[in-house]
Image: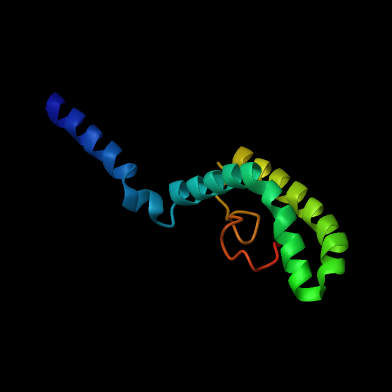
Length: 114
């Protein structure tokens, strides 16, 4: 009977952390998504600078892109980095990531919102 209890514990452990359990809309899935996106955003927040220069130049013109796009890029770089740190620090509260799009490389042609 003691062997069956150990086997049940091991099987339960593996099922709990299986890809289906983590990928589903569960506590572990939401917490891990928030943690991963937080770390990625904290590490790649600086890419917001060229992204905003490119987007603003495309929409408003090159002069506007170099001036206002640079200022917006600096603001979004700091914002994405700080929100990424905050998301990684509070991953145990399983909410959706605070930045939209969650990663800088997703939908690069869309402006970042918080």
